[in-house]
Length: 241
Image (cartoon, rainbow, N blue to C red; front, top):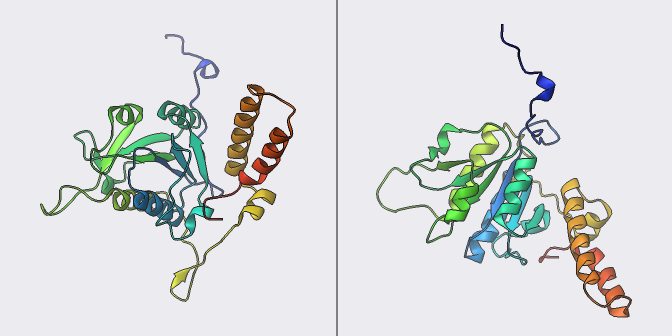
């Protein structure tokens, strides 16, 4: 009988992230979306459908127009490049799914999910770039049932896909009161005093970036000290605070 490899010697896959209920988590990667209305609507849908974090690639400022005040509750992290966000997702066992009408894509209604998943959409006009496609592990598309339009609006498409994942993952429905869902609003002070784990990670990243910048500038000036102090609270602010 041939010798079998010791399981302890085999490379183990990263531990798959789960939410507090032990269920798979969803993540939204925003890159190459051109219209600010779509950014805002995607943020609103991300909050509605239980997205764990929104990963903004490249852009330093997040357009929140159309989010209807939900941006303050969106757990946002910033990444320099697609390579960076891909490495982060892979290290945490999160598969990256491209939402695109593509020959390789599987209908989202079949819910072809295997665990925690990050979703990325293409540009409104041109779709996904080759760089976006290259970092995706698999693709889904939304079947249409007439020839009246070539595709859906990017924010609508993202919303449908996120809802399908929430149903597949069996995320618990949020409480409703008088025809609306109960809104949990956290201002910048609350986020500063009681940050979530993801907010804490993002703050640490921003602090490290500022420290690196100061090391390359003249140190010890009053301006540097003031900038650092103001940055502490800014780390927890959104554009809507």
